[in-house]
Length: 144
Image 1 (cartoon, one colour):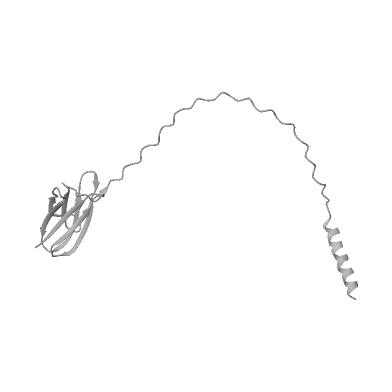
Image 2 (cartoon, one colour; image 1 turned 30 degrees about the vertical axis):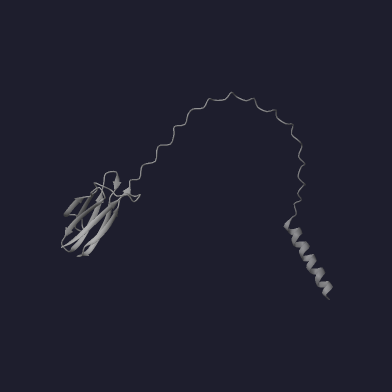
């Protein structure tokens, strides 16, 4: 037989009195022992050698879990309770704001004339091909 001595603590590190410590099998189907912590957050449980799942619980906190494989010697164990996440408060309800009086539209400025774009010249592809051939012929003549 060996003894597990537990210290259960709150998230801020202070001892958690009146927390329940439960020792179960690894599949959490059978409870072997349980104890309640004293004013210093401590309790002890004596067990036969074996594999155990232990959890500490206290109202208002998430339980703390620990596992022990091949447990056979006295041990001191600290279990930390975790704070339950509180749901976010709903967003504040918007307060209605009075609708302001309509503002008259600003006077429309006189449009300034914009210059017209330059005229575009359309060139036939045949003219472009002819110009390219002419340049090639001229370059060939200068080479000679």
